[in-house]
Length: 106
Length: 106
Length: 106
Image (tube, rainbow over all chains, first blue to last red; front, top):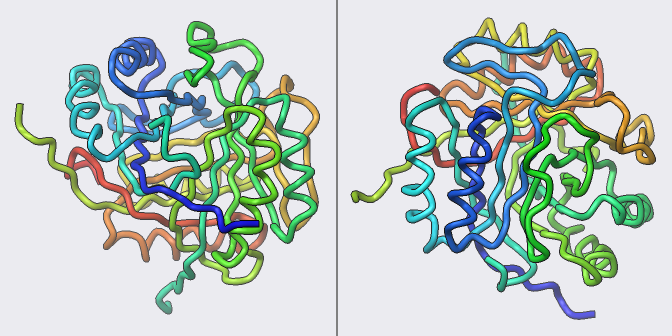
């Protein structure tokens, strides 16, 4: 079987308070971002103090992590667009290098 | 105390529809991959459109993220093995560089 | 609009059994780490075998992923401090490079 080729992309992680998630996803829907995945957080600590570290079983709550894999040339536009949501509260935005199997989609 | 030494590995992330998770994990179990972790997704958008962005409290559902940390020399074999599952639907596979504390295990 | 500037940091991921989470978070609270996010895991396999890959709907359980973004110069101190918790069980610690939007906080 041939070697599996991979292609460089950027992975954007935005950790944001859950009530702002839909607004962030609306913004991503309006950009040329082919998809995203949202993971629920269980507990955390940020500038406003710790939240919910005792209970493992209640409903997923306060923060979510939104993951987007995208072309490097789209990163600046996406960062600028999400800044409106992030400026008003404490989202943590981080970017990293990833390799993907399929060059299209992103 | 001594400096903590770290060792380069690869981190493989596979975001896949939940019904295919067990098949993917069976494949990983058959490979020389020492472990994996599966995180539930809450919402997302992919080539088949958005899913579940309104409810934060229902059961974890549609997509999961499977994380594997492994030796670089095993990456090609693992990618080839998971391709059978991924080809039939829209999993997002991404690879990145990580450093780990323990050189064994992977 | 100006180019969005980013700043290099380190992303620390600790996958740990849930009963040890609070002890790990206490340690992080005692260090100069500005925040963390905890994600629940759904299933996994480690040195003690697989756990919970059949049920997607029960309470989040056995393992969690603790994410911390921090300055590179703090990494060694944090690794040394969490080692006490990790030595006694099978946490997987991995470090990677990320870029963040805000240079402060970390």
